Image 1 (tube, one colour):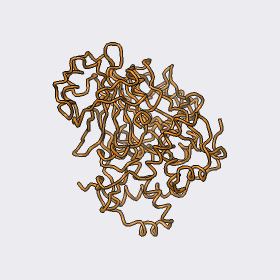
Image 2 (cartoon, rainbow over the protein chains, first blue to last red):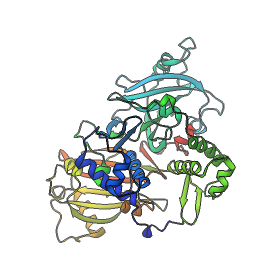
Image 3 (tube, one colour):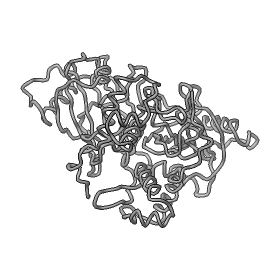
Image 4 (cartoon, each protein chain N blue to C red):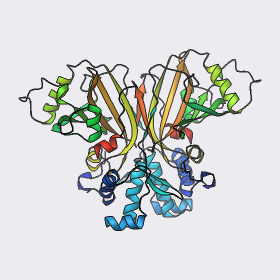
Length: 253
Length: 253
């Protein structure tokens, strides 16, 4: 395998500036405070505007800064811990669910979803769209794919679309006995539609959580949820223990 | 809360190009194939070089493309699923462990680690450095923080540093009865040192997995592991079920 010659790569300028800026944020600024403009910052640190902008982008990616139109660059609050894995498995739509139902349609899902659900290539499935809000802010947008065979008693008389339809699909899904679930987390980016729901710009980095729900010996439903990578820390496992308030990136720097 | 006026933001040009390119990758190129140079690609899609570069960066972030010095831009293989959560809790260094011991030092950890471990502000802890390799490639770099109180019988006669010392620390840690663990996943970026171990450039996006190991009613050890975000998909929970080979970003597009 060809590798880049990393030994010979010095730490780039913007990375050094990022570290210096990060320390300045800790010592001189408080959460919500507006940073000086780019020209002043570049002058203060003796760097080119392009280098400064790269460092600011890096800190935004790391959740340290927020850039908002008409406001400027502000110091971001610590990331919010969002529970993803629960001790006891539960169907989407269970009582303590943090999700809000937005819509429900029927369509043929993308190829990889077809493979996971083992549905026919042209077979439409129910697609429930949900959003998750934490501390008054949108943190995640989800598509939940449910094959017709998982909700056999769903009646066509039920609302044809919208939140009422979504509720009916989840209610029927809960009739199945959940046998287990598994999850994968990876880095992705928000499409224009998802970005709008998350109050971000298209292409914003997201943590993609794919959950497979198993019942009757097969994958009975598949969820693809996009969490805002700038504001969320996904938590798994035993909850209720002491919270670590700062992200590990901050720990490591 | 001030929000950006997202309704008025059209899909940016580079994002549209990313989608078109992504489809071209699926239909025209195979894994490992080298893409035409930037000038030819920009001409083919009728876009400015800057737009093309932004789309390529986006696809690299999503793990679709790899850029390597002296080779060019190649089509990346699908992300590797890396198991992070296990059904049964286990101490680091357990028999089936996928990690390689690199080093062990003693130092005062960063403030957030001090808080999590409830050690004294100036109290040095053992810091074990490990790396994880999957399919012959480095996928993660980890720092494991172990307070002296978790390994009371560790002898000063044991190797003072290096892998042998790391082994001694983990061996002593395993004498404690593990009561539980929890995990958090968030987006971060690799420092120069971490990037080198991961065969990446400084600032490369990583998935930061912070694990707290509980024993004797407290946090007995804390792990901060950085996984390459371009090549890894972190998997949690029931394994051994059918694999979804393509990332959900690809599913959604």
